Image (cartoon, rainbow, N blue to C red; front, side, top):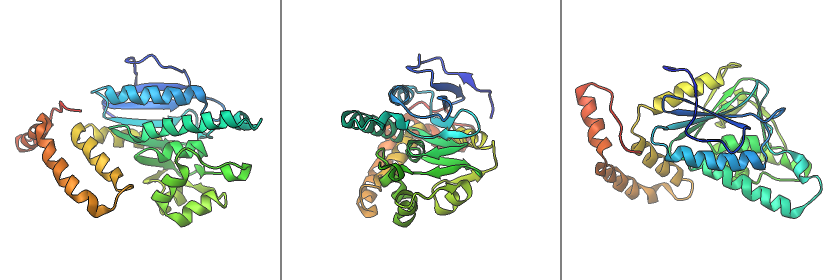
Length: 271
């Protein structure tokens, strides 16, 4: 990293359970809700507000999310929320989880989960909402909801199957199988496995690479890549070509090409 992490002062956080720092064009969000970094109403509302704000910040190109400490990325929802069987609360929380992680998924920049410990249930669903996942070798990943009579309700049944295929999604969800970082990389659930205490540094280095890309080009490319989840490949090819031409409406396209010929770093203006 070129610079040390600094507090992100452009926003007064809704909750102190999400700590926000900045380095270069990267925002680092740390889930800080001990002992297991669980998600609750405060953190979910806070994530929605935070991602919306970062999406409007022209200086932020990438978002890295991790958990405080060395044991938990996030253990997901606090099961005490559902212990009394209140159906109205279940509906409210399911909606809030879905909105929070869909907001994270739709962030215009690049999102990277630095998995430094257990990522269970809603914790893994948070990581699934990110574009890229870096996991330490020792982490444990699972969607264990069916073991307590529930199901993953924040995108888990859909995103996991999309990433790893139906068979592994069924092993993890229907059979309650946990996997470590090494197996997660092998089945395609994470993009890289690293040694203990290296996930955050690796994620921040990768995020720094995003800062060298055109933010507008990244935004358009991301929307096209994710569009393949909803449509067949061939149906998006004409749109891909049109969006390529649309980029010529922005100064960054001319800047990027000319910076290449001038052998200098581009100075991006559009987000």
